[in-house]
Image 1 (tube, rainbow, N blue to C red):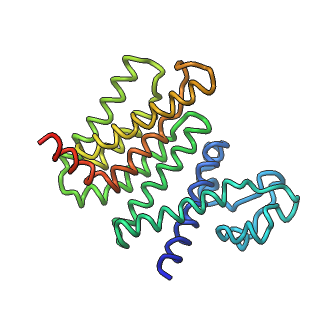
Image 2 (image 1 turned 60 degrees about the vertical axis):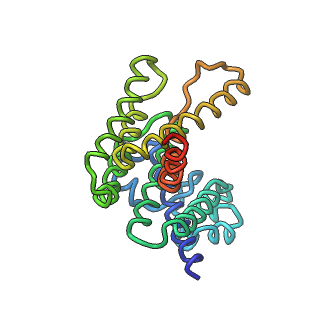
Image 3 (image 1 turned 135 degrees about the vertical axis):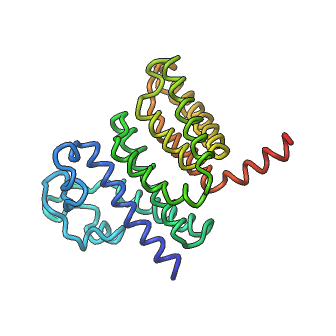
Length: 252
């Protein structure tokens, strides 16, 4: 029963985070931040307000048979996929960290990072407001870590690394990538930031090579890097300590 409730909790927030990302992409926040954040959900095709009953994760889509009740337009399959993703993610975090304020905060942090990734994939930009939310959520874990110096070193490592690459190779990253990386460094501290950085660079390089070859556009392409930073964040938060122990055993 606990797992089911946790899955449902994650699915509800998954729907919220994805909707949040979509509203950043379509410019709703630029028009009215309050309405974009708390406004009711509407069908993107006919603009009709969706009944809250049909917003129940997964169940609502099944009841509607994947179509808007008013105009009959197809509902994007990404919504239930994101709900399932976040539901599974919440169960996984519960399994790894148990249920606590800390684990809930970590789930929200990862949720914001996924929203950042979606926006970056869609428009190659990272909203400052989402980075601010990320930093605010990081306050509690940073306090628990009880080592502000370590968090500062993480900030410097991530921020200066991407800033240096951007200066040496203009256009390789965006300013949003630098700020997002620095925010991740504040949260993780120095050692875990190394794990996050390595993960992001390895995954990003592999995906970049595959994309460059398949698209035949070569390596002079700009790719959204927030998804790779988010992957590094996820690995570091849940497996970082284990990876560091392996490092210590090999090199010390």
